[in-house]
Image (cartoon, rainbow over all chains, first blue to last red; front, side, top):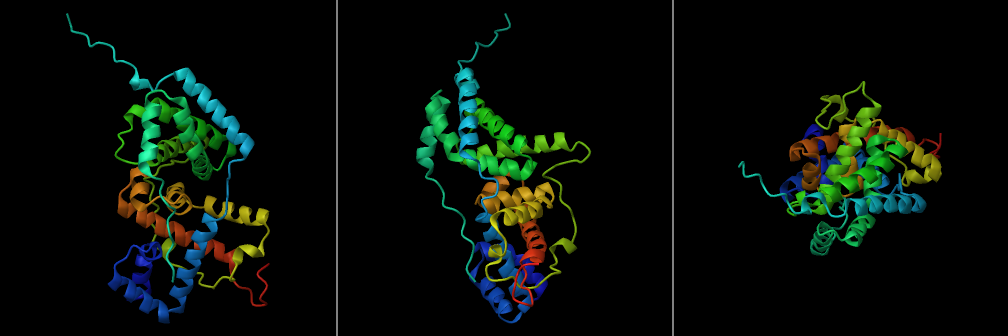
Length: 93
Length: 209
């Protein structure tokens, strides 16, 4: 396995959706290839930082304002559209 | 090396009961669904549109559209995946309106080999985010992810921030599974490459510039 092969498998490797044989080959490559080890490790950190970042959290006041507006408009619509009884089909008479 | 775990899934049956009640016009059941997912929809919308007002509109429009079309929801996929599909479409429409000069499409597939080849392989400090205060860190992360093409950014946000599976992401974005995987890999590698500038180990051991 070379570095290019390793990169192709990186996403599945990080997601843990890889068969045991391929994982063993990737682990073996990581054991001696410093560059791939660094890329793998820092890619994993990238994901973890974004996942824990709380970018764009919805503030409570805005959240309740949005929810009230949504529910008010839903109430105006009454039931979801197609739940209304369907008009009888024209018979063409 | 440990693998990244996706977030846990909500039990479907309870959710389906809420969806069915909402289909019958039970607003409080729909309110429960809004409470469950409004934060997620807001994050996704803000990531795609990069604009707070647009993201607020997307939250309202997506839930209203979902409510109005609940009877179109086939119950074969999760309600959340269906809602995300609606929200992504609404967000892309906003983005197109703001950037009419650029075509914005999820089919956009910037075909370059070099974007997947790591050029910067310096290792990072052990706790890179601690080198910056909260505001600085958010600025760095926001600027960096906003530099990705929308098609890559959306896949990364759904998979890695919101924790959808590859299959759910493909379903929500109407993309094939190989397309999702390819975009995810390139998004992850591009973000990693760009963040290395901020997070790499400094020779004097101090991460700050």
